[in-house]
Length: 546
Ligand SMILES: O=P(O)(O)OC[C@H]1O[C@H](O)[C@H](O)[C@@H](O)[C@@H]1O
Image (cartoon, rainbow, N blue to C red; front, side, top):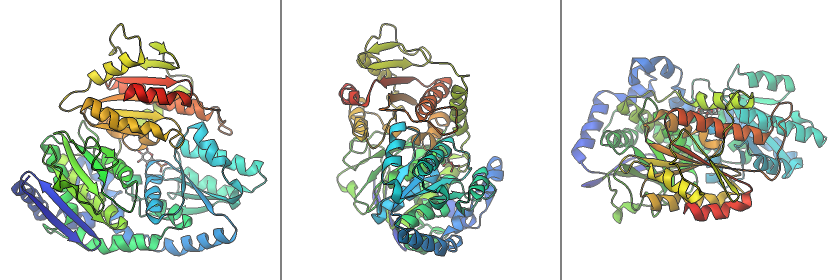
């Protein structure tokens, strides 16, 4: 690494380290010559090649959101006041992926409470239903209006309100795209409806109604968020070698070309916890396809394993004001730190992702492999899927393994896990841990990420199911075939019916885990599933994994 260079604009600041200043300068110069920034902000759909043109043409509305979202603000503010006056102080958000990750960060940044219900885990859903229902307003967010988790959560709240003698129409607010099936059913039910910009895809929708409505109702300063994005917009739209969006995109694109195709994201003291989870979806779903892509690896801090020490196939990126690279040199030589106010950061990352997508040679606006997991889950629920057979039982843990990769003679969880870890390619491979559990109650399990990163010396990701299916799930199936997968499932404390549907939440969650496992196995990815008898057994499992 030879240099750290700064690229700053209103409300944002970016510093880079890279192995070869000349290579980065040349890549940025090419982007400037091709007028990529100004064409992006002029919604030029030809930037990602002919095959991507049709989709891109309807997905570039996000470049104008700092202005086009303004008319929403008055309505959001008025509703917020009305809700407070009615004593409705708890805001629950039902939504997955692009419909919940942005509001989660925006509210964390603002220090206001938003209860994000992005799960089909029955214990998790029940906790949300039972907490202060009398003071609760529920935002149901779904762009397509057809996401089964969100639909199930809405049904559960409608029933809970009705059972408590509360009229659901007084408590449910819907955010969706115009013309979706949810818009229609919501209007019929008399719910308050906010329509989002249909020319913006879910993971680019932070500054649309999807980000602004739940956050504004929870009390976040959404006017300031748009102001911060607006302040950065001109600098990000400029065909200029100092454009931070171009430079971050070029760094990611160059890293990819040099074989550094994992992006480790660490918080360097940012005032917004959780930006990494939002970037994770943006980068993984946008780039992970056609056997290519960037794998985001979200870690706690710059002292976490995978950041320090890092591997040669990782680009290290921090967000926040800290600058950890004085003491840490990325093994790949690629590193950057991005600071800025939240609205500016979000727009900057969106630009960088679109730019990296162009350099990697993919369409950053589709998600061709997400549907396969949904279809497999549907098939399981309809009784058409193959019921899995366990390979062994070890105390409270039942073990399942896909397609014959587990060696003969494995008789314990310890052996099975060791066999899975052995399958990780030492130069390019990664491990994805996928926990289909209650992410609040079972949060301690997430510590296995660090432990497994140390144990394997390889990039390790940790995702909560089904949340990650709407984020890194696309990359796992559509990206390079370098992952091995450890699923953790468990028996709930109690199951919960999905009102007026022929399945329970636990059946749905199980179908999602099994269905995604089968799709991964169909892509020749090794999958090991550990099913624990109760969440009390997770402490022992943590020991085994670490
Ligand atoms: O907002 P919805 O239509 O309910 O979609 C929620 C999520 O669903 C899918 O998983 C997509 O791949 C995501 O990009 C999207 O954010």
